[in-house]
Structure formats: structure tokens, C-alpha cells
Length: 253
Ligand SMILES: Nc1ncnc2c1ncn2[C@@H]1O[C@H](COP(=O)(O)OP(=O)(O)OP(=O)(O)O)[C@@H](O)[C@H]1O
Image 1: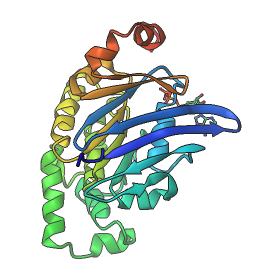
Image 2 (image 1 turned 90 degrees about the vertical axis):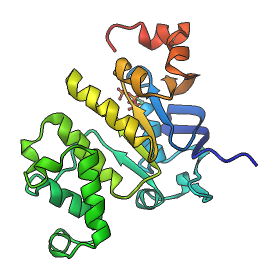
Image 3 (image 1 turned 90 degrees about the horizontal axis):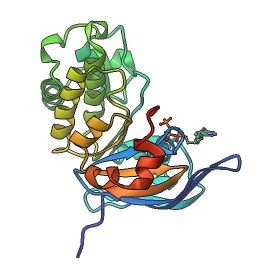
Image 4 (image 1 turned 180 degrees about the vertical axis):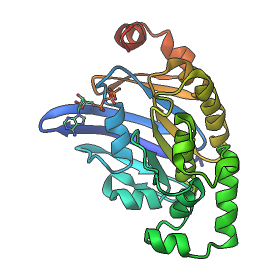
């Protein structure tokens, strides 16, 4: 029997006070796939990302998540249950605690159910310490673990945010423009990080940096005015005349 895709978005529409932000969108994402959502401003990319993590309600259709033989209707769940079932979302706004060290930010993420005070004074299990150590290695911040976040560059802060998401061992990570504000060097490092992240989970990334998209994506979904106008490899979609006309050929994007 053919395995179900990890994520199945089926005929989803989303309206805001009568405005059709998303119209009849269907797509599937496989485990360990890196999918990019691209398209012009206002195309609906963030709206659908918000629907996957429970931040937006859908008007019709369904969103199902199928990790490890489970089957969850995400559109019927509240956001914290979606998170618990394995979907983590990184927003563009930072969520770091500036007064806590990098290590303690990860402690808080590991001991998520406790208050800040209890989390910091709780004794971590060996497994929790190993998780934090492994993530610090993964995101390249082991050397600065006892520093406050302000010493980090913009890129390092973004990698720490990704590390905070990894703590819960999600099956799907949703990223909104992870390279925004980064220079080329940090973007290159983020490419390496995402290639490594793919060994652990699937990723959906909303992005306007087309070089980054070309280097990292397994597949790309192109949105325009709330609909999908093409899907496939970056090479395929970039030669579609409609995609060039509404997005790739426009100098202002
Ligand atoms: N909560 C909301 N209420 C009303 N309209 C909304 C809401 N959220 C999004 N929209 C509208 O839905 C459309 C799609 O917005 P969305 O943010 O998903 O676009 P996007 O493709 O992510 O664009 P960008 O690349 O600029 O981030 C836009 O016209 C936006 O104004």
C-alpha cells in the first residue's frame, strides 16, 4: 500500500470578511521534503502557512498530517495541539528571551510546560542535556552557549530560533523567510543548515530569495492571487511563462 504524504492540503479556501485570500488550494508534502512556497506579495503564502499551524481557520477543504501511521485533521485542532502532534512554526519576529543565556533559552524550550523560574532551577534529565548539546552543535553555537543572545549576529539568532523549534523533534517545520536580513555568507550557512535539517524532518519555507530557493528546495509551489499556478522543481517552475510574468520576471519582488 502506498504511504500517505506527511501533509495533505486538499481543496482549501480561506476568506477574510468575504475576501478570498486562498481559493481551492491542494498540494502534498512528503516526509523529509523541503518545499518552498513562492509568489508575489499578497499571493497567500503566509495565509496558508498560518492555516497549517492553526493560526488561520479555513473556510472549506481539509489539512491532514500523517506522521508515523497517525492521522490528524489539523484544520480541526487548536494551535498548541498541532504543535504537540509535530508541526513547529518559526515566525519572522524573534521569540528569544534576551535576558537569558543561549543555553537557558534552550532549557526553557526543553522544559516547555514549566514556568520560567521552575524551568531554570529544575534538574534536567541526561536526555534533555544531550538534546540541548546536540542542538547547540547542530546550529553551530556551542562556543557561545553561556552568552546572552545580544552577542549573536542576525543569522546566528535565526539559527538559534530554528534550534528552539528542533527541541520538540517536529516532523514538519514551517519557516517564514528564514534568510530575510542576512548577508550572502549567513544565507550560505543557512542553506547548509536546511540541508542537514532535512535528514530529520520536512520543511515548508516561504521565501523571496530565489537563489536560496534554487539551492535548497526539493520542490516549489507557486502562488498567485490565492491560487497555485505551478508546482514542481525550481527548474520546472522558473521556465513557466506565467510564473515569469506574475513573479520571477518582476524586478520589484
Ligand atoms: N487576517 C487577515 N485579514 C484580512 N486580510 C488578510 C489577513 N491575512 C492576510 N490577508 C490578506 O490576504 C492576502 C494574502 O496575504 P499573505 O500574507 O498570505 O500574502 P503573502 O503571499 O504571504 O505575501 P508576502 O510575500 O508579502 O508576505 C493579502 O491580500 C492580505 O492582505
